[in-house]
Image: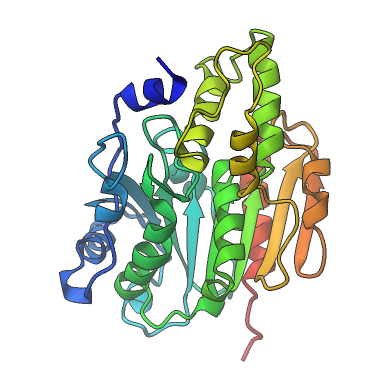
Length: 332
């Protein structure tokens, strides 16, 4: 059986969220976000779940659901009433992100004195193979369209009416870092800024690196066949028609067609038009190296190299990005 057939034979089990765009009062995503806001815990955290037609159109036959987490500011009521100049931050979770990871990250955030209120909306992009890559694909559904056309408009209406693109940020870690850069570069007028933490955005190099590991019998970044699932998810998201790997060849290699498909999503440089961007990468990251990202550095794109690995620097880097991208207004 060809690899692509094997991929399609895998069972799908997405966890909840989402909806396609719609009229305000009739949009189930907006209604779900409103309900989650009203039932947030004492620290402002809540989860929401909504079915999405955009995500339901997938080759796995998955139900088209995902999860969204909310971290609301102390002035959440003022934001929801449009009575405060709030910021909306969309956070894209990484590949295989464990349940509760955004909640743990959100718990570590502290409001800065005199800073404007910030509404966080975290999207869990996990799929049957570990991750959607936040692009529109036949395999996993229209995740990019969902974020741009459904999630952001619904979040504005339900949580922070009147919030303009200039006060809307897109952030993400790892696969979510790729998603944040991809969406910020593809839709620059939607965002006032973006931040990517350890973004795995050099798709061709990453696929070849994974294949080299697999050829040596190494498939355990975290003990759960991580490399195989990461590679299969890339093949499903970026290369809809054929297998990513030429199956019978040893050592395994990318087919020319697969390499061309991956190259379409390779993020090596920033386009001429883009919002302000901050990129963070650790020297000890096994998946991303500072050299992979240096081509992105330039006007409006700041690259910060840290001493961390793929996960350890995230809380501090997130705080740094928010302080850089969300200015504190001068005292009146």
